[in-house]
Length: 277
Image 1 (cartoon, one colour):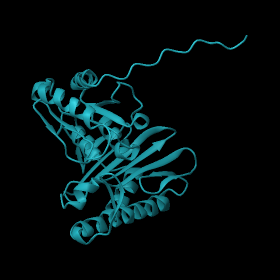
Image 2 (cartoon, one colour):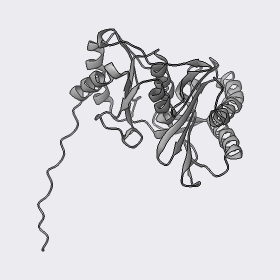
Image 3 (tube, helix red, strand yellow):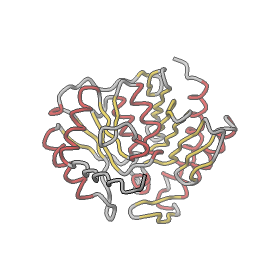
């Protein structure tokens, strides 16, 4: 199946940014690294990849806005917005672990309509467009058909040292570990979502994410027949910064277990109206 014009634009931008990224990965010990937060590193490779992505996407679609990991929000036409993570899996990258990706999502009028996730080390280009299906390179993707959590392989994201939410995450892991065939913490949320879309993982959950970690992956998942929600069961993943992803059979079961492990805080009762009429 031929790629659409918009997927072609996104894929070419990712491939161009990946050239230097792969070269820098081969010389990872020489990178200039600055600390951006607790266990959250940014490298020169990250910054250069984002610059390339922005230049290529702006050249192809001049009026579109951006939400960038490093560069923040760039206003555009108010309709179309690129959501870009130039290097998802920075810690893996900086340790020489070959599991990271470039993620580009396209949002139109508040809806995610296209996504590309490119793993340059494995030469795997995951891509999807609303209504057009999900693909790995040129092969069609479909979520796994597994119906039983007991044999399911589930991906997750866990906070690193010093980050908030560790106790909560450990409670979730304990519950999921007891009910499933295995847990994997791979270190790249976008690739985790792509792997669920590809049937490599049966499910995935993580909290504390950013829109650029999820945007492209949510399109892939939906177009591959998968389901997603936030940790509460709602559909505001980019706002709540959490995601639970799986096939139709396992999604509800996985979400139920997570909410059982860490119930949402009760809402405060509404205050009585004491204002004068």
